[in-house]
Amino acid sequence: MEFKHKPVMLAECIEGLKIKPDGIYVDGTLGGAGHSKEIVKNLSSQGVLIGIDRDQEALEAAKKNLSQFSNVKYIHDNHDNIKSILRQFEIDKVDGILLDLGVSSYQLDERNRGFSYLGENVLDMRMDKTQELTAQVVVNSYSEQELANIIYEYGEERFSRQIARNICKERENHRIETTRELTHIIEKSIPKSKQKDGHPSKRTFQAIRIEVNNEIKPLYHTIKDCIESLSEKGRLCVITFHSLEDRAVKKAFLDVKGRCTCPNDLPYCVCGAKSLGKIITKKPILASKEELEDNTRSKSAKLRIFERCESIKC
Image 1 (cartoon, rainbow, N blue to C red):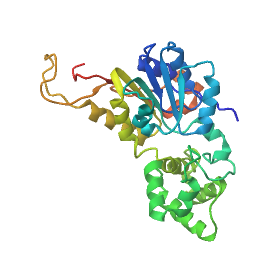
Image 2 (cartoon, helix red, strand yellow):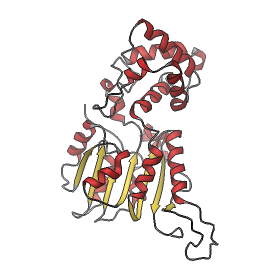
Image 3 (cartoon, rainbow, N blue to C red):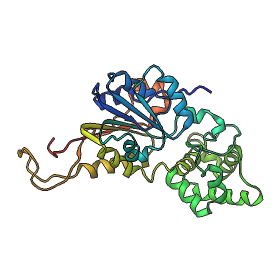
């Protein structure tokens, strides 16, 4: 299946990065290289793009999409390891980083990956096929309480306890191995009168996917690591699709920004507050009306931008 993925808020990301032609940039969620292609178009032959993805299929698709560019480095890894990845190339600081979080359209559409609740496929949901933890392991080995907590926290599913209870009852009879089996359990767990807000399995599948790929827990520290890896005036652009993602990004931005108590008329900070820069987006940027009509994935997207600078008054 061809790796097709419409980049969300492409123009806004490119504008937000303030690309320097000779700079070094990182796309920490390379995917099909929709964002990356536009970044590398803005680079000179001296500029460098480092593309990171935990999905090997995404990397192969990106290599094809960017085959005409010779200044791209491809890394099969997780953006959570941004500092160690840069050390591999003996790079201390970069001029910009982009993170487009969440699952790609390709991963959802490629049914045999097990991300989708449509059809009947093996429960997998791994972005990185080399890791051991799969959706099948989560569903069949986590305790009822663990499942309920994950489904409630990551999926914001009000019927999380009923779903977890029924999963545990079903797996006493046989191992739950397919997406259809799990979907049937979820549908039986939610009253028909409450199944009006989209597909009843949507929130539970999202929750299990987040658990399998550990998408939330490291995010706060990943954002801080990315900002610490920026050069002066370098920028970090982060697109989130889930309230927990956005909360972690917002908190990291605020903590790294710090709070200066100096009067505004002072040219530099004397209060001792430590800051790594400033938040460019006081409120997150949302997709335009035109993009919402053209790309449904942009519906819940939020773009936040941070700029690295040494002085808190910058």
